[in-house]
View 1 (cartoon, rainbow, N blue to C red):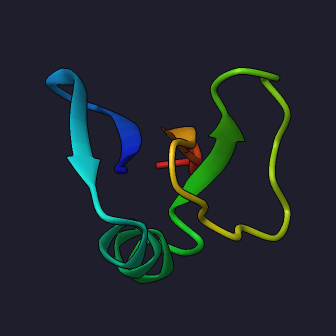
View 2 (cartoon, helix red, strand yellow):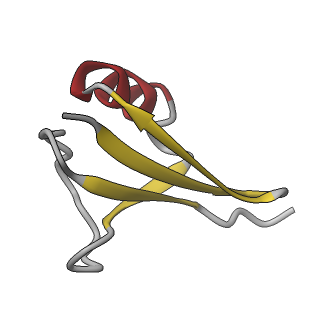
Length: 65
């Protein structure tokens, strides 16, 4: 099984399918730059524990500029 991660960025959005370990590494690397949202429930996740078959959204945190 894989984890589907959709990342919103300047190009629109990008969807990738990763193993749970790779998805966790990607989310940990971007910590503080993106909100992580469960795609099915649309709830903001405060603690991210990646599980197989999960769908996540990465939404950039807006910063003044």
